[in-house]
Image 1 (cartoon, rainbow, N blue to C red):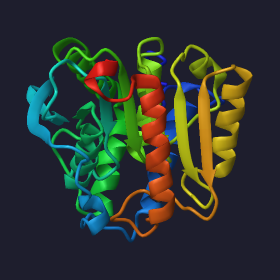
Image 2: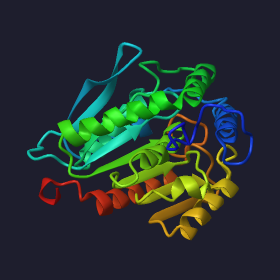
Image 3: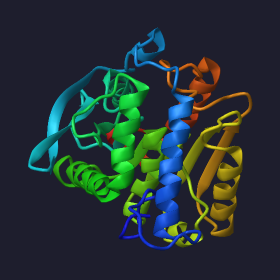
Image 4: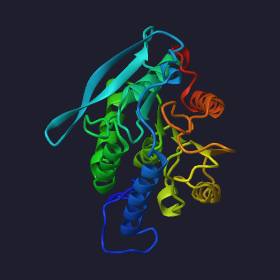
Length: 293
């Protein structure tokens, strides 16, 4: 829902009608407020759950992939140590805290499943250690979504052209969950899978109609930031448009149920969501082995 019609979070214009750029920009600001409430008592200290080792040895490095305001943007690039031929790739999009150690650990776990993984940085190298700073970083993206969209395009170009990935998916949590859906809008016929962990969604059929990307949405029934009603409206729109999707709403799970550093972490739900994610990615990207790529 950016100026070009792709992103969900847009810059303001004069109209306030439903579905207009102004209404969507306000929805983005409302989402920032909701995330501020949800994460008010959270911190970024890693727990043991964030230190789960990858299933197989990986290689990872900090890699420049874009330039914003004359400054290089660095992401986290990871892949199996035994990779010979290009594997399917996953673009990982961080939560509202930024590209921190927890997100890099999740990227490494995905790489250990047999994927090329590129974790992007939509905050220009900044990482929040408090909810107040995270709010400002997220709000800056809401007010200038085209810059973030271009960031995603650069990441896609890297894994597609430089890394040579035969298939590409996206995975994001919270703020990044909304941007995983945005990535499907940016590449409606080229992205092969999009996973949304409790991210902002839309039921605007004009914006969803062009998407030909399989979607997996994972949400909590007790999430007060991403309401069940908004998820159900999103699901109904996908159904009317006959899209390829799976929506799972977990009972008694709140926002950020898969974030081991948050107050709402739910180990049982997080594990089920992880299994669903791997099955979904395996079905749409391949098994993650060189033989399937």
